[in-house]
Image 1 (spheres, helix red, strand yellow):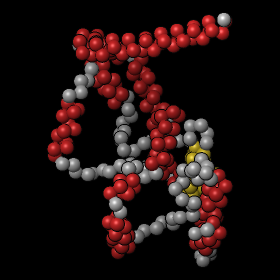
Image 2 (spheres, helix red, strand yellow):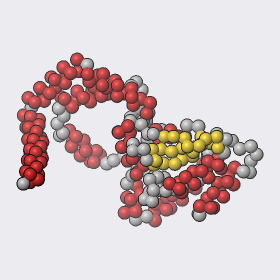
Image 3 (cartoon, one colour):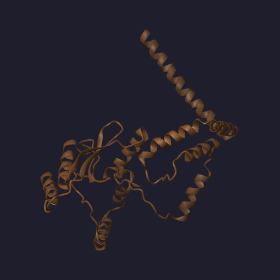
Image 4 (cartoon, one colour):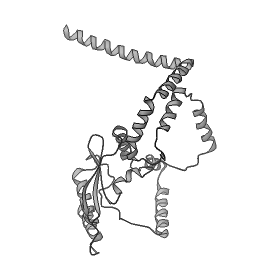
Length: 271
């Protein structure tokens, strides 16, 4: 479908009804550097949909979202235009995506040129069955490599694995030694989380609260004493002590080589 056809289709969506709703808007997501990465259309709380998803099928977008959350603790998002009809919002969405450009020709990570979807769309059971059968028919025609490529960015939940595989993975975890210091940090991190926190739902409003509570917890006298005891106990374990010493030796060797290299460069410039 050409750009002109997309816009015509968007214009025709709601012009058949008199007095269109004007509660739609066009919004944008930005990464930690301030670069725009997503253009969307919606109404109500649509701009915050990213925080209500357990998974994001767009793998590239998911990676950028995770990195941005790690750096700034939130996803910068702005409503670019509001008080629009749905057709006006579709036209503006298509236009902005076209002007800014989708990856790899631009910074946007949208998977389409925009203008898709319909607000309040609900399919009947028969429509759901037809869609399911059509998807299954397409899936059966794909090779093993094509299926792997299509599902590599999906998080498959609820899949029952063979008992042998479950036991094998559990055995690997059982053999991994965990220090007292590690256990103490995990315990304190969980205690610092707000009530009702859910791993499957990311709520940006809790980010500052969690960080402040974690900082207060780590700076408290009782926690410092517990960490001190945990470090002493961990150092008493010969395995952990040897690993720590080897790591310190490697770090010092890297630092020493860097210092010697800087001195060598300085002498060469003097000569």
